[in-house]
Length: 102
View 1 (cartoon, one colour):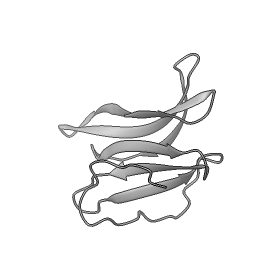
View 2 (cartoon, rainbow, N blue to C red):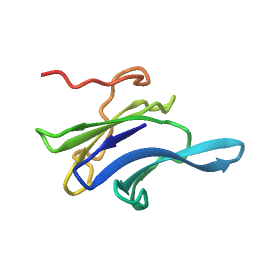
View 3 (cartoon, one colour):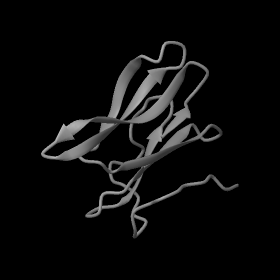
View 4 (tube, rainbow, N blue to C red):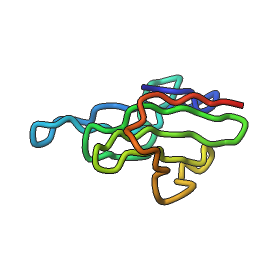
């Protein structure tokens, strides 16, 4: 999944590689102009990151983590790329699809 963060940068969930027979996903920031990875935001350690959505009005972005043992949604500050809360927001089941509703 990917989303535009601002006019120059985007966010993408990419497969880093396969470890112990399982793919590992990462959330990265990339340059829209070149496609080059600018920084790593989150390394899941497994194949659990599923969706990223940007809330431009609130300067936040949300990442769905489908970890079967601890599913939830990570919330980040769009300008600093830092977590707003050090814990995931629990949603009960692994999040499949997110939408911003006003």
